[in-house]
Length: 604
Image (tube, helix red, strand yellow):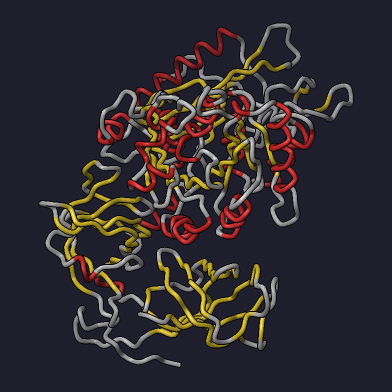
């Protein structure tokens, strides 16, 4: 898909560096704006620029090309409905239809009458499968005809059944005082800020956060979109349950801390909560300052696709905003980033950016907006509404067929409910009343427990599927036996735990040399623990930028790790990334679950 996208950039899009905004269509768009005439794939007049073509239609994915849908027979109609069900399944409840486009990608267009009839048929198809349609945009094309011909891009979204709405997680990064919490407050509360931080007050969890105006903990906020693409937030819904009930698609924002002293909390949020995307917020008046570069580096290291929001444009002149955008553009184009920045200035740009962004990891949309005046805020909402999931239904089905594994990220005690854990289901399916084992404890054991009830986005849920975040009530289970970094798994899994592991790492920065005996804080998924460097294979020491395979030993207790898991470590200014290559597992015994992973001994 990347080669297709780069082809389209050559023809239909102009990046920021080229002196303009995103133009025309990408991998799934209507390809409008191209005025060169083409017929049957041959170039007329010898002009090769801006051909009215899209990439050929893919069999997989949620994008469907249709030349016309005028008065289909009953048999044809049933076939079209079956096809729509397939596309909706591929997009996990969302599909994009391009009306007026041939299967090979040729942009033919339809007359107004044909288009009206085709949209009527599409609406009937959507009603048949319990979905709604929303026209994203219309474009005129020039196709050797005196009659104006149009292409229409339509979003089809299924009304959720059985609480299975599409849920995307977006981590919010950026320097302190860049306006992250304020922006989330405006998006989720539906009211503009007063310029003094009123919008962010509902997001803070602690008194000192309200007093200082700075986020120090991880908080979650939700923004919904219904099947017609309309925003559902607290402005017209009083509770989170009402938002969930009214929404077909949910965006869960993970509000992370911007201050450097809370960096470990921010890293934990990025590694543990498995965000689908990251939103980097940059203040227009201060530009790239403080932890902005560090947060950008974290998103790059963990391979989280990110887009950028330049906030507080109401405080600056147009020249200052342009200077900040150019500063961002310079950094994104550096060899370390190698991104293609695309400035979003209209609804059309927002639609194109959302679809291009999901298809190519090199594209970085940039929004310029204000939480006080509301300038360009709607463009961000359009982008979030259309943003497709990174995984298709097939990949999720494969994960669901594996054994249950739930990462424990948060632990609470709720009156009259008991112990509650929050986290993400990495694989399998979890149901109410299911028996699981949780661990490893400090002495390496796994303990039996029962899932009493499940909640997603603060509303009750009977079944949890792979990739979904939720809270599980464990009833009277002793909270003191739990800690962050544990996993709840199916008893059949026989999980591997270790105190010693090896990882292939790259040392991103170290003031002197990285040697045996050095202690670092290691982040692997939801695991966060201090580890000591036991051995550097093939070398005595490492310097900044060097690679090596390193053996680490956790200093407190064993952890559950997987080979291939992304690893990030830090200590002061020292930072490195890598992946786990080998585990020295603790030997298991064969006499019962609670004793399966006893203290044991290490195999070397």
